[in-house]
Length: 122
Image (tube, rainbow, N blue to C red; front, side, top):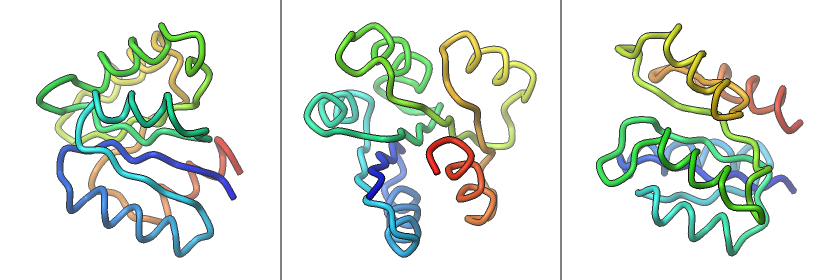
C-alpha cells in the first residue's frame, strides 16, 4: 500500500484528504507543520508528500529545500497544494527548481487530486 503524507496547517483539509485517500486504498498520515512533516519523513517510508505552500512556521518551499537537503529523504516525491490566488507561472517555476512533481490548486475536486497522485506514484 502506498504511503502519503498530507502537510497542511488547516487540520480539517488534511483530515478530509486523508479520509478520501484511505477510501482509495492509500495509507495516509497528516502533519500540521513543516517541522512535524520532516520528522515523519525521517521516521516513515513515504511514497509521496502532498505539501501546502502557505504555512506559518515553514512554508512549503522551505520544507522542500530542507527535505531535498537531507540525503536520507531527498528522493520522496512532492506535490504542492496551493490556493488559487497564487501565480501559476511562479509556482511552476519554483516547484521545478525544487524538484517537486507538480502542484494542484485548492480547492480542486478530489478526483483531480487522485488523478495527479496516480500520475506520480500509481
